[in-house]
Length: 141
Image 1 (cartoon, helix red, strand yellow):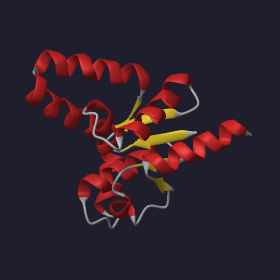
Image 2 (cartoon, rainbow, N blue to C red):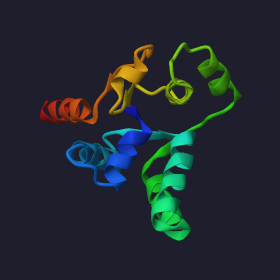
Image 3 (cartoon, rainbow, N blue to C red):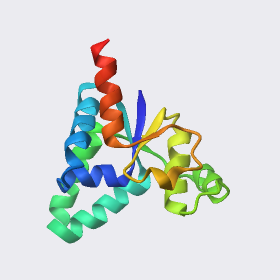
């Protein structure tokens, strides 16, 4: 299953934002064990770097991004994605870019803590808790 992780899910893990981080960590473990093909939008990478560099310094930010890149594929933000995002009808352009980036790579779903921001999505949009339950049920089969 191909899943694009919204920026807030990555931050939940990196910043250990309870109670959200438990389910997000479980999803990261799914990426690590290969049961999920995880994607991060190119904009997520730049946002995480910016926030991490401010919080822990450039060297540590680079180290954390390198770790993320060992697990996740990067969904590109190219001309096609940006043009599609401009006409996607989302209230927030950044969310539209994340959505169109997910579509571009053929994601099966988006995982986010802000499902309301993806009302226009034609892809299924789940919270990390919902996706963790779905994956757990699939493993029991």
